[in-house]
Length: 421
Image 1 (cartoon, rainbow, N blue to C red):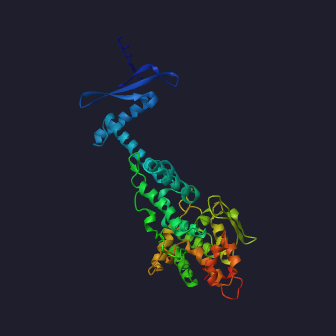
Image 2: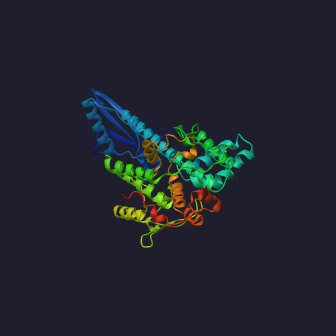
Image 3: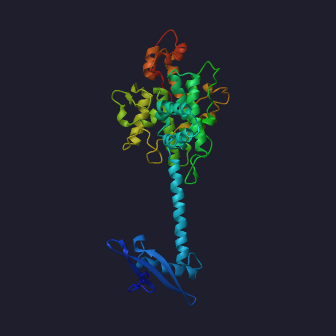
């Protein structure tokens, strides 16, 4: 059977452009049109097939493009032909797609990679008991803590906080190591897993900078806390860095860190709790804040605010009246601020970790919570009151501070007035 001969139509008012229609291919309820363009250069005729109207081709657009190509040719620029132009467009499309795929990978959460890539890979290679235990540990503790965070946003400080949370729940060194091993294996697998030709995770795994406990260690808890002088020095450094920062965003980042440190020192809030704190959680009249209870996080509760915290929060309120979060993202968007890197910069610049011989002796952001409890104990606050303020599940978690409590007790929260000079 012979193919039907194409009937070409010229476009009125558009020199050199013609098309044919295909009844079997519809566009907006009418036969689709395939366009060709004829043009001359150096006395020689050229003709190029372009594409269908359903793909966006129109006579007006073709005319505009042809005029631009002719101008490029006269000026010695590229592209000069429709073929070159379409190749350029395709190259830009592929580049944009590559950027989109890379951004998608950067946004891949720990949960997504663990469930879609790590466990299927391990299930094919390991005995059921091995990967089933990993799933159990992940579902119970790891995913509630890290699951919704992009892989690239997980820092050593967050892993320190995760380890501390397990120790607060009285887990043994062995159990902690099992959980950290799952995290390490997940990141190791992410460094060799590709999606659309791109590696899921690049760079140094955050767990590589975490000092893991040894099974022979008897003391698991973080030991070191800040003195009042050290805390004031950190706060002054943040203020100075904010004042000297060259850009507005830099000033805001350092000021946010200053305020987050002050809040943690005077309330014992964890970094994640500070990041999630909203203005609706603050009661200025009652001088309290509410830590919302989350099924995937630690217990909530009502925390008293001393005068230092109240003054700082009122200042923040005047600067961010429209924001729901107390610490909204400096650069916009929905991503929460992560203070770990800036905090490490400050501590390193002051040399506070230079003589640390073990992980428990290092000052990290979570050390601020430990400092809060230690200062309360030193101030003579009753161990049961410390347990309440720290929102510990059991008294055993709080007993680590008992040796700091002097014989005479006194009111303490208001005495934790740092950063007021």
